[in-house]
Length: 402
Image 1 (cartoon, helix red, strand yellow):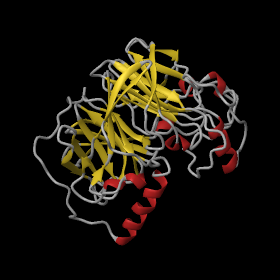
Image 2: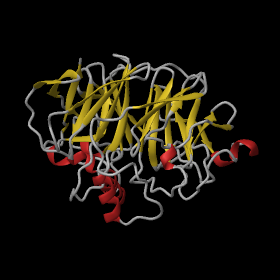
Image 3: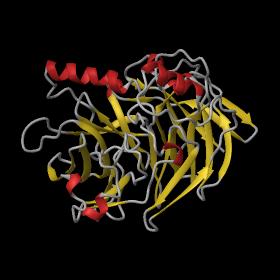
Image 4: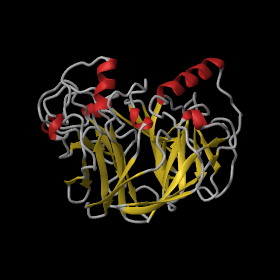
């Protein structure tokens, strides 16, 4: 087994040592616009508010993260452990650690661009401990590094890690190392997940597999797309997104066009689900468009249907939260992820996977649900880009749910 989680005690501020070249700067700035299509912003007031709802009580208060520099907009994906927020900084090519008790950067793991310890094209990561950091290099490999950014191992050739009997259970497309925009790791078996998208394959096949660090072999997991996704050609890159959250026994996951929440149990090797149907009427049924779609057709589809965007496990209160938004007919926002220009509904599930309650957040057109996470204090959701008025901070709201 890998070493247990250990957050570095020393404080090291971000620095401008070893700045990227101008060419690399242009590349990173262009990446900013790619990723921020997923992180649209909101206009909101920042007054504290306690709001009663039919199904529960919650409070909202501003909570800003001090990055110590002007690079807040370059944080693309994140992970939270023990009230430490890990953020991959694409500009500095580093993994920055934020102590959420003081809301500031306390450490930075700096990675190399060149040399024997070089890692590049980072698309996701998993922080296991100070001496076990996993970085995904596109879909080509997963690199294991220690806290000194020294490469301990590199895992690759995933498509050939299956026996013939196992490979035919999965879609034939090349595996992705990102599911729900993150690298999912099973610390009980030292495995990480491989995601096989269906694209234009009509067969019902498995979509996830587990790659073992010990054997460098993979096995297909009994996890499938929702029934409504079957026999369809889906645009899985922008329209049909996934979300996942690791819990105490496995991981829960959702699909953006399905109200069902799923959970896979590592030890039992089985999937359970709950239909957490929100309190709204659909403009259209769960119609999944077949074949290629134009940009305007995608926008119309998203506006006419609910969007189920994020799911979180809260280990402190032993419950799950799902963030979604209702249909918004005739929406004209240019951003495909129109959920950020809408009302946000929080659905609460018990640890036993029972749908407990739903409530709307009172602020509309405010939250960037793509950048959100759970802390010991509650659920934190970022504001959007135009509301991030001070680049020294990443601004958002903390939602405390009774």
